[in-house]
Image (spheres, rainbow, N blue to C red):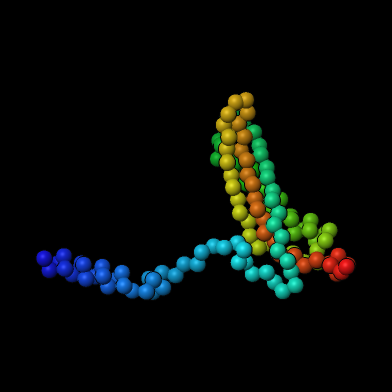
Length: 127
């Protein structure tokens, strides 16, 4: 009886503690990313798909398409600074990978949302 009462008292004591004392988690919010002063946030969507090659492990094929997609994501700042921006900073990447196994062709698809902070060149930002 005493053990049940002690366990119940401990439960009540823990339950009444402020939650910040037990854990502190910050929910991920891509819109809350810090954008440097003078920059604007832009999003780039990339999508790739490959047919699934029979006889090769699907995991290896997924890894290969992921590497290609991340390489493309990494080049976005280079492309943007060559065309419209003075500076570019990669803020985040969201990835979605799926496989479709249906006749006549099975595919692996990957989509990326790349969030960037850029500062436009002076000649572009002036009216």
